[in-house]
Amino acid sequence: MATNPAGTGIMENITPSDSPPSPFDAPTSSPLPSVPPNTPSTPSPSGPPTTPFPSPGQPRFPSASQNRDAKMPDLPEMGENESPGAQRESQVSSSSRNSTLLRKNPRSRGASETSAGRIDPGTAFPPYDPRFSLSLSVSAANGAAASQLPLDDDGRKKIVVLGSGDFGLALATRLVQANYRVAVGSRDPERCRSKVEATGGIPMTHAEALRESAVVVLAVPFQHTGSLPLSNLANKIVIDVSNRNPKDRDSSGRSQAEHLQNLLPTARVVKAFNVLSAYTLSRGIRGSKEVPVCGDDKEAKQLVSEVVKDLRLDSTDLGGLQSAREVEEIPFQFFTEWKFGVILSTVVWCIMFVVTLFRSQLCSNLENMHKPNFTWDWSGFDGIVRDNVSSSSAGAALTLLALCYLPGVIAAYVQLARGTKYSEFPLWLDTWLKGRKHIGILMLWNAAIHAILVLSYSMGSVGLYDDTYSWRGPTYVACGAFTLLLAGVLGVASLPSVSASMTWREFSFVQSRVGWLVLLLASFHIIFNFWDGLIKNNFSCYFLPSIAQLCIVLPLLTLVLKLPLLTPCVDRSLTRIRQGYERVSLHGLTGV
Ligand code: NAP
Image 1 (cartoon, rainbow, N blue to C red):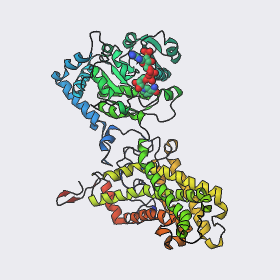
Image 2 (image 1 turned 45 degrees about the vertical axis):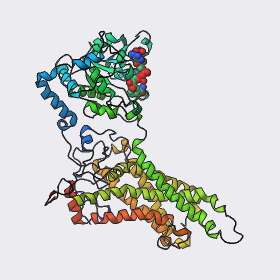
Image 3 (image 1 turned 90 degrees about the vertical axis):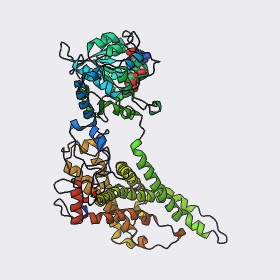
């Protein structure tokens, strides 16, 4: 067993004792690290813990550096200046020193802007040239654009919202609540006066509003951008809140924000707020408070992040404007991250259901079919919900629990074999590691179904007081009860309000050690219940294994594979690898 001052036995972990371990030993390449909010900045040499139970409060959006590290787990946090966005920004700084790069691009401007300073809506967007817009953004930063929001006489920050639609008004409401002076620019300020004034904003024409502040929120549907007085947006910080349905993606793949930047070469476009809905904003944020912010100009991005913070939201820097390609499609995602877990869980449940249906309902009929006077016995079907659904859910729950822990163990072996943590996991393992959170939730769901059905239908006959079970009766019931309760603890600990109140060690303890304990107890629940039947098989029913035999295989395999990792020498090697050590072979680094 590994030497770990925090615990002994199977629950010991393989990460060093000075930092609490991750439940899933392998550092994951998941872009969503399961880190409680009060996690120390360098919590574990083996990287942030990942859990089968995602905390909704955990960041939904990878930071710029996380994006870069998505396939290279456990790299130390990079400084902000090392993020791709910052790298681009430093390129900008160097390009600003090169005065020849600071010229406007006459081609793109002339192609899209009319003499009235408006963009012809029918004009095709000129190709996006990040170098060009970055150069200009620096000149804008040195020129008229503000690095701080202007203040009115009462010391309130001034900001412009263009568009008096649902989103513009909802955002104006929140900004006014945050003590901003909000000028709402509209095509017809009189028509929307009452609505705007109800938010505390001031209705104005576009031109009047744009004189108020150098920071402008563009809350007008993207397709109508061309009918705005775009020349008045020159040198301003433009916050693009638009969303895009992936179906509307054009062949260039560029985001609307990038197109906007091309239309407004002297402006500094920042993508923000688009993941919030008007409904959420107007009712007060109850769900996630995370707002991804991206843009090519560091100063503009910082200023927008401050606006985000003023609204009591959390900004997440996603780097350059190119990240808007993903960000503006986020609101159209449909349970994308759940796909793997849901498919896996459904397949596992269906396999369990078919096996139990065959064994308990169909087999006796099929085997007796050749007998004379055979009549099909339908009586078994009465208990389909009570017996088959319940046992399928139990089998699926245990299998899914093992499937939460198995990829971490496999990843540990991969790292040991390669002698490094700096190489990518195979795609299948990477997908599996990322899917553990959802598999964990679906495990809990199946366990709850099983418990409810058992309690409601068969409490009197589970064998608690049945002599044939002797001590095994109460023991397996107790194991089941503890399993369910502790699995519930894992789920509850993943709630943002709960995980936020936990320390790193507490969070890791629950998700790792308690998690393994749940797997152990769940396995005992099956073993004690089906003691004889597990080993003996009367090979009836076309050699189909029983549900107990079927669902115990993966947990046992996972536990058996875990044991060698707990031996001191393996533990030490793995710990070193996770601390950044790379084994060098004659041919250079192994596994790279
Ligand atoms: P909306 O209710 O349709 O309102 C848009 C506003 O844009 C209108 O009230 C109008 O304001 C102005 N407008 C409409 N047609 C125009 C035109 N041809 N020229 C100039 N201005 C025009 O839209 P919305 O829901 O507020 O959405 C606005 C932006 O926010 C969109 O880009 C959307 O993707 C983004 N967004 C919306 C939500 C949401 O929950 N609704 C969430 C995130 C992001 P005036 O009459 O005052 O000129």
